[in-house]
Length: 278
Length: 290
Figure 1 (tube, rainbow over the protein chains, first blue to last red):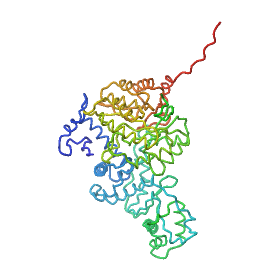
Figure 2 (figure 1 turned 90 degrees about the vertical axis):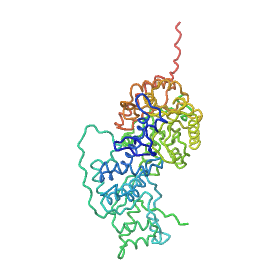
Figure 3 (figure 1 turned 60 degrees about the horizontal axis):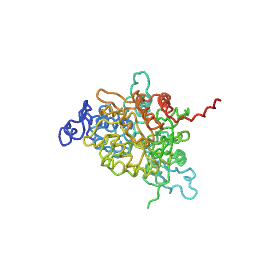
Figure 4 (figure 1 turned 135 degrees about the vertical axis):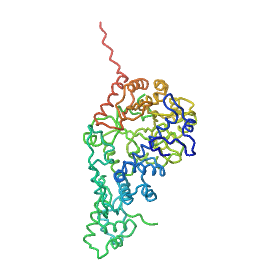
């Protein structure tokens, strides 16, 4: 679908440079109030408004850091390159990370921040309604039948483990207090107008490790440290528990601490059995 | 006529669309509502909060599924993954019938997420009916198709919209979800008499009705679902009920959504029209006076 013009109108030329008025007149009837062009334009505009709105619902943090106009420009370019290929709009932003990597000028001068934000917000889409498998229990983990170090675990499909360059969890929480769009889009209309609160300043860089997950069907961001990040991502890659622990620690692992981590993560239902390799 | 094979022999009464801003109210207050209509695609996910809420609603209420993405008028092959997910949801909700729109919206695997108007040709009717049958056969429940509001008409059309609707539902042997507001909107945008539409469709196939509000612009009317139902639409609704009998009716309110009570109150205005055309009980003969 061709993007709208700068004035949010339908393009005046078709892809082969023919006049759109001639093109639309060939298959659409005019009426006494609207030309063929104007009638098709209603649909053309609705298409872009609907998709950009849905995109905004999924990436409100990205819009907050880029600003409305750059965000709309990015959304339009992205959606023109990656139109929806699914019956649901849920997957609309699936290719945004690669798109930004390939088109850094669209988010300049905040490339690193935008890359982090997209990864963080897409992780929330996955955590909201992603597939869940039967979690491994503490008993399973303690290994009554075999050496726990040999166990291969996977993480729930809805979980994303992130290494970010910015503390976006804190930023988003502060932004929510100002009425983040994703929370407000389905809200009932408020009567009376209030002055919108000031948005929080764009975050300063700070290495951050986060697990985006859900518990009792509510979305959570859980801070972890670099060792936990290495351990969890090692498990995700398919390493057994023993090797994952080795990869996490530069020095001697602390068994009590590892036990506590696994206990917490198991209680959160993060682990599932890894499908056996054929 | 209201309970018929096209709506799984149900007489549901007056329902409203299940919308996120009302979740908390419904789950905590458990208001008396005849039934809720859900947008199928909002619950065709793998897990998470949407399905948890749906399960809570299903414990208390009758739910009917209404879809926005089957695109009966498209020419692509039906997406089997989409149909499988839809059937899984049908089993979960126990919906007795399912509705979607008489429109197209995808081409070559690209989705517009819009309800685009059809060219009213015999070839399009044949293709659309085939797809309706395919869905009906796969889901194993009755399917009813809804007339959409539209803003454009095609030169190639060979019949009126209501003739096209009739052609499709009779070829597919399916029911109609009659959206009275959509007929009104399209009649204003295209300049036809909406009562011709209401009079000339196969009334025995109407399994459900929709009513809604719309927005008037200088040169056209937009189907915005963000207002109470307007008087001309209520008048048409009364006529439709007279023709079809007291049919399960749903109020759609999808933008600028007010409180649950306000939406429900608006929906219940349909009651007087339904009651007016409900078959009266035959009175006992008065005792003969000697």
